[in-house]
Image (tube, rainbow, N blue to C red; front, top):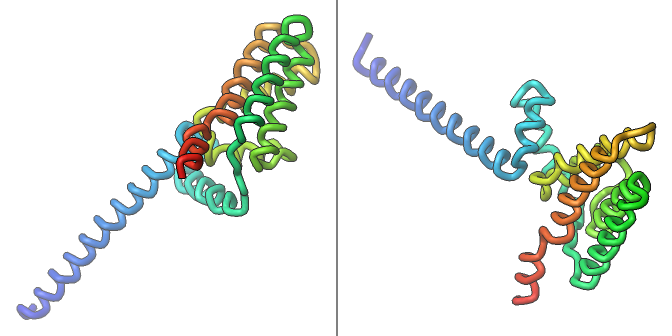
Length: 188
């Protein structure tokens, strides 16, 4: 083999090694960004899909679908009103736990609607919430599951209490998670 041919093989091999390394680091960075953005939802989606590529494709699709969402922060008066309604639901839980859990679900969905999230389909709600509230999303899933079982039949007071705790986690995130945004907007 001539020296020129050896040189071309070495150049092509070097380009392929560099391209592979760049591709590897680019994929790793994209994966890390998805993990950071979706938090625990990333691992849950990977486990549910059974395939990391399919899960990452789903998460990127969620991010792309979120474009038309017009998610708005709550103004202080709305935040205060919702907090008062939550306090009333918690008080009702003492005497009527089942109906209070149903009211908690309705109140969470009311806040979601006010902020601009979809409230019609649970799967769509989860998809939309995963973009900004991934840290409390599992709470919502658990609350929804318990609430569904409560509607179908008897569940224990402890389970209803857990549902309220789970709803409260998402509720707090929905009404308080954008406080920095409101302060930042007020300063501008």
